[in-house]
Every structure is written in structure tokens, then in C-alpha cells.
Length: 109
Image (cartoon, rainbow, N blue to C red):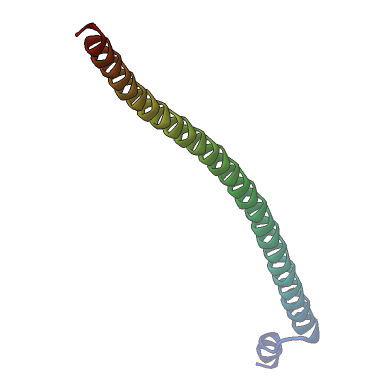
């Protein structure tokens, strides 16, 4: 009876081993948490750099598109001015021709 009771009682060695195992587990868990935190920081820094590059690319593309749009608007405005000038010039030519025809008619009659 005494021998079986003695076997059921935890010995100091067993408690010490359990304590060592528990401390090892806590230490590994802390290392794991620290490693995860560091990986998350690195991932966020990488994503921040990627988004910064994407934003810069997007803004440079916008600048190119804006320049193209402004050039297109300049060309269209110049074309509109030229068309209006040509139209007015043709009317003026018709008026001058009419005046010359009238003057020639008056001179001959």
C-alpha cells in the first residue's frame, strides 16, 4: 500500500520537469509572437513601399494624360480659330469681289 501511494505522489523531479517544460513552452510562444510581429511589420513596410510606387506610377500616368489632354485642347482651339479665320476671310473675299464687280459695272455704264 505504501509503495503504490508513493508512486502516485508527484516527485520534485517531475514538478521541476513540468516547470521547465512550461517555461520552455512560454519562451517559444513569446519568440513566436515576436517573430510574427516582426514579420507583420516587414509585410506592412513592404506593402507601404509597393503602394507608394503604385501611387507614383499612377500620378506620373495622370500627368502624362493631362499633358496629352491639354495638347489636344490646344490643337482643337487652334483648329477652331483657323476655321473661323478662313470663314471670315472667305466672306471678306466675297465682299471685295462684289465691290470690285459693282465698281467695274459702274465704270462701264
